[in-house]
Length: 332
Image (cartoon, one colour):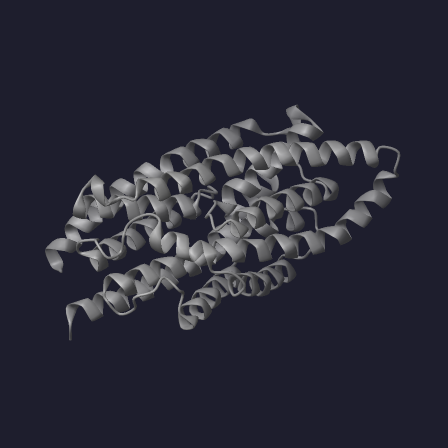
């Protein structure tokens, strides 16, 4: 059997595996607040998130095209299939390590860092399309800062509007609202995160000469959406516990403010075709809401641990991918 064909099949399998892992690794963030406030039972939250993720993944393809064409030029990438396979293996490895320790790291950082690291190992720094790559990095950096600020602002408005309301009645109403906001948050996650694997598979198909356009094939879109939905159905309890309780004690009104913030930032990024870290955005939304509620109520030790992981993910995944590429290149 042709080596290139075998590599392409492996890439599709690993890309779907990445999406599956992304489902239980990252989607946990989207439902963490609603589970922690008991607005939704865990099983119901996971079923809802699975469905909304699938629908979201089938709605847009702009982010996928950005991943396909803005990091490296697929037509100039030497040993392209080996590069992409190495990147996927590295990203999956880092996701599993951080999931095991319950750290909400970024799958987006891991994947983008891995693609860049493996591509540089194969073809040098000149292979990177720096304009597009820097644009993606800017989105990854700016989006959590924006989420923190918007979360702080929205909850500050909530405090003024609902300051004279009965706490018990307010919490009951916001639990009902949280069902809707959690669904919107899960949908927004699907519109951005599932597309990254779609872009990677399409990049591999172009590199292998099997397709010529950056348009995402329908079978790629459906399979990636299904893989993420299935992964979501497994649930990521360790990360739900971190995001839903170890950053701050979340009440329904906090959860609604954080969900609205996270969904708005992720939707905004999807509409301008930029990949963002849903993990960073959602966690930063909670930090912003928590700071507006009561700064001392935020568990800054957990937040610091998360931020450190955010910063180290991209370089570690890049180096890991470069090492894996070197090994795979000897095999293939």
